[in-house]
Length: 349
Image (cartoon, rainbow, N blue to C red; front, side, top):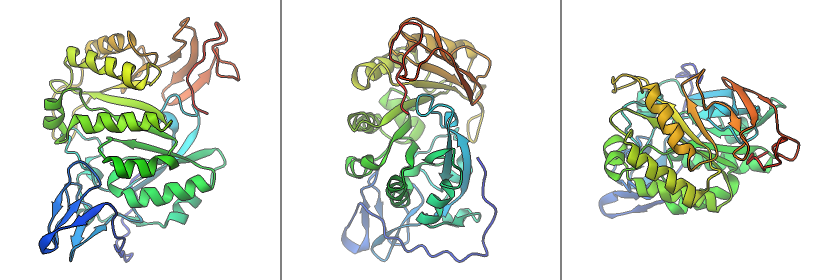
């Protein structure tokens, strides 16, 4: 990720009225973008820190405001089964509706506009234009912080990008209400959703959110036919219970499909969490358990170990080999079938 330079000499005008809110009495507002349903009083923001009540109207503070841009390998999102080996223009802004204590991008996710001077103002056309400057780039990824909290900007970019033949990818915590998600889905091509845990208590403690809303978003994404991959950052003492994890993999297999890739990412001390890194023995054990139900399981933040490559779930042949974010194809033909046994490898491209 590349943070943009301080552009405080530019004049920003935050005048984009937000969508999905209801005025209440005394100029208070009920925000209906995410399940928090914040009641926001005049001069205040919601839990995301970037949606502000000004005189009884809700404004999207980060509309046309970016904190980070970069061309990334698609594998960095991580998406291993969506146009593997390609590049994608990644953009991020500010804010998040979760409060994860080990957030790797807390500098931009746990702040609002007033607390971050290094924003760059870019119109929708400018963003799409930047994405189009590299012929090898497949589209735009909304990432780095939680993109759903800058929904209006994301939506408008996605519509324009889709019209110009670019792919739209969201890397998200999946904490959004049904109506805004359903309006966005026709313009989206792929998601990586961070499934933080599979216990209601752990979810509430870790994120200040509720698990069932994320499960519903995952189901809606699958029903819409978008490409879906799931990431779980394994944090010691938070989501490392093997019984709960087994239930999670069973739910994914039964409700979303055995071919949905699962990325298990190794935790390292960050932000407010200083527990030791996830033990590799635990991470490997969880990958083995997940592989009993799911076709494609990967380990992240753990280079040089097993579960980096894509293997045919039918015969075990090496289909795609990975070195970091870079890949080489082996036993896969032009139709996406295993060259060894003919089994269809689930890859979107």
